[in-house]
Length: 160
Ligand code: FES
Ligand code: FES
Image 1: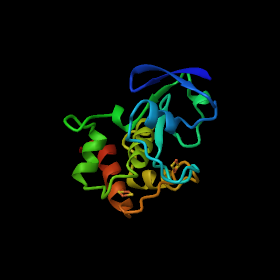
Image 2: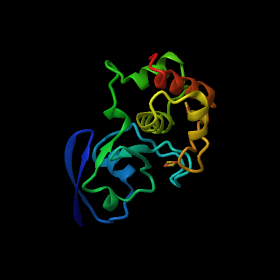
Image 3: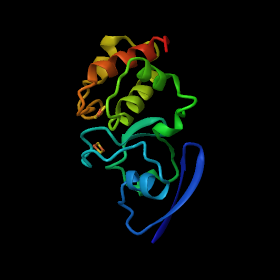
């Protein structure tokens, strides 16, 4: 058993893990009781488990705890709250850009990171980013993709 330290949403944690290849997603859900990042495919293909690692979007289902230790992790819970949503979350609310909400960590966290690095990104630029192989691949079984794009454009243009 090994102990790993990591920072999640500004808080410091130490977790004891038998297997260093244990996915970060399992630690977030089971040890830290954070239910925002979801298990979708478990293969790095759908994006439902997306979190930020030092500001970069990663797929926590295929990121080992040993590769996460010592880094800053941000989950969707770290952006805003129900009472005080972040402006990107408000944009998703305003555009009604979700149905069941299961996949939301993907578009919200990936979109947040992209727009932080590309302020005022246009619809075409965001669409291009969402077309990037693997990194931009975000699957929504409710088929809310076009509304999610509207929400990201709204956030990017600062109208949220
Ligand atoms: S659950 Fe991680 S990419 Fe699908
Ligand atoms: S809103 Fe249901 S899977 Fe995306």
